[in-house]
Each structure stands twice: as C-alpha cells, then as structure tokens.
Amino acid sequence: MALDTEAANADGTAARPEPNGSAPTKPDGAPRPGLNGSGRPELSRQISGLDALELGGTAGRNPLARAWSAVWPMASAVLIALLAWQIVVWSGWKPSYVLPGPADTLPVLGDQLGKGSFWGAVGLTMQRAVVGFAVSVVVGTVVGALVTQSSVLRRAVGSLITGLQTMPSIAWFPLAILLFQLSEQAILFVVVLGAAPSIANGLIAGVDYTPPILLRAGKVMGLRGLNLYRHLILPASLPSFVAGLKQGWAFAWRSLMAGELLVVISSHTSLGVLLSQAREFSQTDAMISYMIVILVIGIVMDRLFGLVDGAIRTRWGLDGD
Amino acid sequence: MTQAVEAAASRAVPSGAAVRLDGVSKAFGSLPALDDVSLRVEPGEFVCLLGASGCGKSTLLNLVAALDRPSAGTIDTAGRRVALMFQEPALFPWLTVTANIELALKTRGVPRAERRARSAELLASVHLAGFEKKRPHQLSGGMRQRVALARALALTIDTEGTGTLLLMDEPFGALDAMTRDLLHDELERIWRERNLSVLFVTHNVREAVRLGDRVVLLSSRPGRVVEEFPVPMDRPRRIDSTEVAALAATITDRLREEVGRHGA
Ligand SMILES: Nc1ncnc2c1ncn2[C@@H]1O[C@H](COP(=O)(O)OP(=O)(O)O)[C@@H](O)[C@H]1O
Ligand SMILES: [Mg+2]
Image (cartoon, rainbow over all chains, first blue to last red; front, top):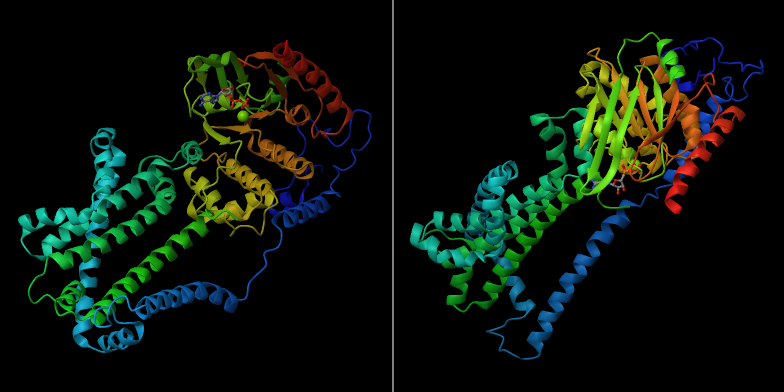
C-alpha cells in the first residue's frame, strides 16, 4: 500500500485504504513509481544518513587533559600573585614587619589551619553566611514572585529593588546598629538587604524574559495557572534565577565581611574579628593569612555556583556551540 | 469549493465547519495585515493557505489559535481543540525530545502510562527514533522541526471527542527536499487516520498542491483571499508529478500577478 512506511509499521498501524480505493494507480492505470513501498525503508535510511551528517562528530577529549586545562590557569594565577607579592617585598618599599613576604606568611597560615580556635571562627562566619543567604533566598524569592504577579507592585517596587542593589551595603550599618545594637540581627539585616535584591531581580528577569514564542507554545498546549508555572515559566527562568543567586551570594559575602569588622560582638569570634585583632596587634602575617582564607572561601563558593550555573546552561543549550 | 466539500463529506464527518472566519481583519497599529478575510475549513478537510511572505499568513494562524485577537470579524472553531505548529520549532529547551512530546500528550489528557509509548510512536513517524534522550539544542534545525511536528501531532490527540483543528505555519520550510517529501506522506497518513481538519500555511506552491484538498491564495498588504483552487487529483500525490506541476503553474501565475501589483 502506498503509505506503508517503516514508521507506519513500527507503530503497529496498517496503512489505511484510500477512501476512493483508486490511489495506487493513476487514471491511466500506470503504477506510481517510488510510492509503492519498496523505496521507503531506503528513503528512511537515507534520512538517518542526512541526520548523521548534519549532526557531525563530537570529538571526545581525554579527562586528564580536561582536568589539566581547568587547573593550569588557576595555578598560574596563584603563582603570578605570589610572585607579584614577593617582588613588592623585595623592592623594600615597606619593612618586612609591616609587609611580610609569602615565605613568612604562608607558615603562619599553616599554623592557623591547625588550630581549633581558627576553625571555630571560620565556622561562625560560615554559619552567618549560610543563614543570611538562606533568609535572602526566601525574602528575594517571595518579593520577586509577588512583583512578577502584580503590575502595581512592579511599578511600586521594581525600581526600588534595583535601587537597593546599587546601595553599598556598608552604608546600612549605622542604621542597623541603631536598630539592633551590636548583635547578630544587625549583621543579618545588612546581609539580607545586600543579597535579597539580586535574588529578586534574577527571578523577575527570568520570568520577564521567558521567550514569547515558548509562552505562545504553552498557550497552544493549554498550559494555564499553576501548570504554566510548573512546566514553563519556572524552568524557563531558572538560569536567570541561578545567576541572581550567584550574585546574591557575592553581595552576602561582602556585606558579611563588612559587618564582622564593624559589628564586633564580644565572645563571638569570627573571621572578621580575627582580622581586626590581627590589625590591632600589628600581626600583618596573620592578617594576610585571614585575608587569604576569606579570598579562598569566596572563590570556592563562586566556583560552586558557577558549576550549577554551567550545568543548567549546558542542559538548556544556552552555551551556543 | 464544492469539490472540497465533497472530499470532506466522503470521509463522513459531523456537519458544521471546523473553523469559520467571517470578515476577519487585523491591523498592527495603522498597518493593516489582514483585511476582510472569510474562510472555512470543513471537518476533515486539508486546506493550504498560500501567499507571499509578509502577507499575513502567520497572523491569520495566530488569530485562529486565539493567540491574538482580530481587529474586526469573527472566528469560530466550534469548541475544537487547536494544535499549532509554529514556523520555528519552539521546543522547551530544558526538556528532552521525549519529554517535550510527553508534556504535549499530558496537556491533551493522555494517561501517564500511555505517554512513553505514544511519544515513541510519534517520534518514529517523523524518523527520529533513537533521539528520545537528546535535548533540542543537540539536534540540527531540521530535526528540531520534526520534533515540533511530532509535538503538534501529539496535540491533535482528541481525548474529549471535540475534534481537532491542526494549524501549520510553513512547517517544512527549513527541511531538505528528501525529508520534506517523506513528512508529507506521514502528515497525510496521520491526517486521514485521525480525521483531522488542517489549515496549512506555505509559500511553496507545489507543496500546497501536493497536500491540499483546496488551495487558498492570499494577496499581500493587506492579506485578502484572492482566489481558491480546488485540487482534484487523487491521493497520494507526488510533488513532482505532472498534474501537480500543471496546477502549481496555474496558481503560480496567479500569485505572480498578485505580487506584481505591488511592483508597479
Ligand atoms: N506583532 C506585530 N506587530 C507589528 N507588525 C506585525 C506583527 N506581526 C506581524 N506584523 C506585520 O504583519 C504583516 C504580516 O506578517 P506575517 O503574518 O508574519 O506574514 P507571513 O507569515 O505571511 O510572512 C507583516 O508586514 C508584518 O511585518
Ligand atoms: Mg509567517
């Protein structure tokens, strides 16, 4: 039968007869070439061939080479930084008790890493960071979701959120200290004000920039209400939301460090407190060690968000290959 | 027109048009895109809408799919579900090929247990068996367009018995001729099997004659129905047959005349 293609067989449906029963032959009675079944499986194979050609080959890279290509730029960056530092020290610009070199500082850092009190301080700082970030995620998401839902809220709050984002968070501390004294709440308040706007904006941008063609496809499918969010708007806005989270984390981390230097709570020893103490006792080597720790934590967290972001972008096909 | 009605009637379908447009106009600002378009597609009929690019074909399909509202006139789909295949694939990039199709099946009320098999069936019919787990960006443009066809076909599954109107906007424009011919056959088969009513937009005259029971010619700026051509040839037709070529030549002349009015 004329439409007896491979696919018709595959889905178990026999080709149906023509309504007028005369399809395979033209009025002059000649069979139609190419439509009589024999040519179709071959055609189908040719199409697979075409597809294979269009997709091209993907050259796999050896995992060792990939690991190396990820590591060497970072390793060389560290080396360059150490070298620059050492050169400044060698130049004799400052005496070595004011600015010690890597050779004097790194052993101090090593010492610190072996101390329980140091890890206690890191623990407190990380706990504040995680709690502050978590609260920011909740606040940012709720505010962002509300703003996307109401045009009135959007006009009222939309530009306010962007305004908040441009405000240096350290400028909030005087107010925070008046409101909450030197307390954990003061730090949390500023961390959340620093991070939540980025998170809200990420969500708002994601919802706003859901591609219109996908929204129309969703409408044709009849996606509405909760289903529209679940199957279309939320997944479509995820990359932008994660970018907002990443930026929010960076703001949270900066606000937290500012907060730990300004809001010193007795008996709450954090990284920021260690840093101020080192400055007070002119222990530059210890001070630089703490700075290195703060830098490393920042880089590691940024990498983690980068990994999630990258995984999503790859999955969504946003990398552009 | 009469042949078309007969062709539709021969497949024993309920009375009343699958879609009826009465005096439909659409303007974007002061720019008229469609002007007083009246058009019917009978249940089970395959109508091809032909026109130069920019004449308002996509606009018309958007109106029928209720994605946009006409400036004047009425559109009646008599409660039918509408499936639309866009000019671009418009697949959800975060879903695999199968998941894209299964989501469409879900929206049409196909039970979860059946979705996997149904989607495999649809993918096989567009010659993409084996690509289920890929994501759209891993496929070529033509393959994506075929997934979009499978999804549109998934949307024509009629679990409520309301009948389905399938709208297609230059669906095969991006495909090579070999693949396109094969998909013409598949589309024709599924159209018959499901007794679909199809409004198929193209600017390829031969494709219109190959597929349509009727070819409706649209003028440009603003879009108006200028003429309708019944296609009397038996199915299946070959796009390179002499009958198709002959009718296509007639329609092309008429189209040239229409486009020529804008050159002067
Ligand atoms: N959303 C829109 N806003 C303004 N003009 C539009 C819009 N959509 C289409 N048009 C205009 O309407 C006319 C018809 O467009 P379209 O329906 O896409 O044509 P076709 O699909 O036949 O190529 C074109 O001139 C186009 O520029
Ligand atoms: Mg168009």
